[in-house]
Image 1 (tube, rainbow, N blue to C red):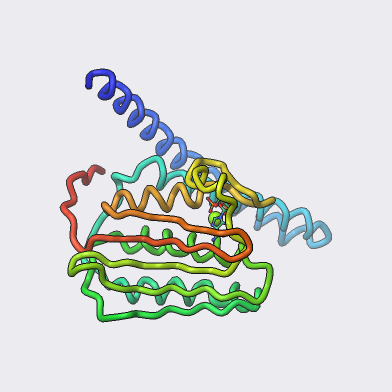
Image 2 (cartoon, rainbow, N blue to C red):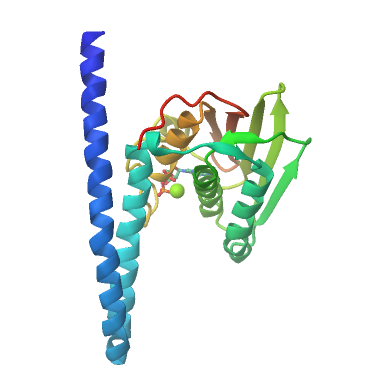
Length: 232
Ligand code: ADP
Ligand code: MG
């Protein structure tokens, strides 16, 4: 156990460093972005360069934000929330993107669900990532169905099913590893963040997939859990 302890000590130091670094990187990014926008209004003929620089800055910012969640899950704050509202917000955010891919996005509730102790922001991030991946897996004309049901009286199951490209069996175990991506513009941090968020909520996430048929991801969340760590 001593060896184990030392290892987890090291991990948390590394996590804290990473989280600190991520914070420090975001401040200069914000100021860079501001000055770029100022310059942009003076140099209309170089518009294209500015667009590239701004989108690259946004990409760094996005990667750093995803990283922050991974590095410091203990900074999550929990409160009693309505999962239906959370999922409806996620659908509203991604509806346009789905329409552009001719993809139908359906949210259905198999029963009434009770309130859940969670971090709304992080559950939004979790489901945005899952639905985004589903949309990105669909070349065109797809269906994504999110169905919510109760498991017993204290767990909620959120099942996301798509009919996208699927994932080869030998790749399944790599999901959630940092930087594993098959996309040209992917970060390979999304699923890792999803696993971290689910874990922090004392839930589980299971992925089933078959090539050419699609992918099904089950997120099982307890409606209530004892929050032990609340640092910060
Ligand atoms: P990213 O989306 O940046 O590539 P993720 O961690 O979100 O990173 O996903 C990692 C990889 O897992 C993706 O590149 C893709 O190959 C695979 N994947 C995730 N979700 C799905 C899905 N619903 N259908 C098919 N492949 C998926
Ligand atoms: Mg992703």
